[in-house]
Figure 1 (cartoon, rainbow, N blue to C red):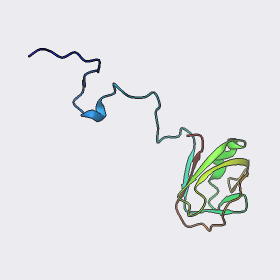
Figure 2 (figure 1 turned 90 degrees about the horizontal axis):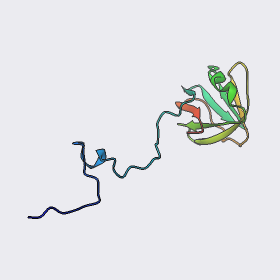
Figure 3 (figure 1 turned 90 degrees about the vertical axis):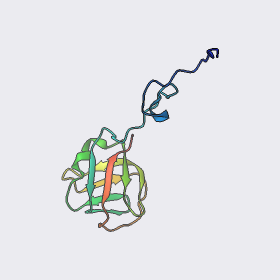
Figure 4 (figure 1 turned 180 degrees about the vertical axis):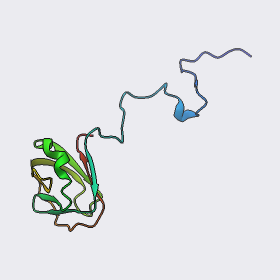
Length: 114
């Protein structure tokens, strides 16, 4: 039997098709956003203010003019433009309107530019 010619790269790993990077794209999706991450059940939402009774929002003091992402909220999961952060870490003010929500759910706030 004659050898067949092919332009495809051979699979060089034993990880199956998922391990073959011959057709991989240059885009990488990472679960680590590279910025601050804050998780708490003490976060509430009202008007344009995200509040934390545990005052853990100071991590985002340098984020004025940048975006944060909210996850784990019942009604406010999305990205927001930060307009102010209280020096004591109790509040973040955002440009967009929030749905009023009491603290209780485990909410994650992280760098919105993932």
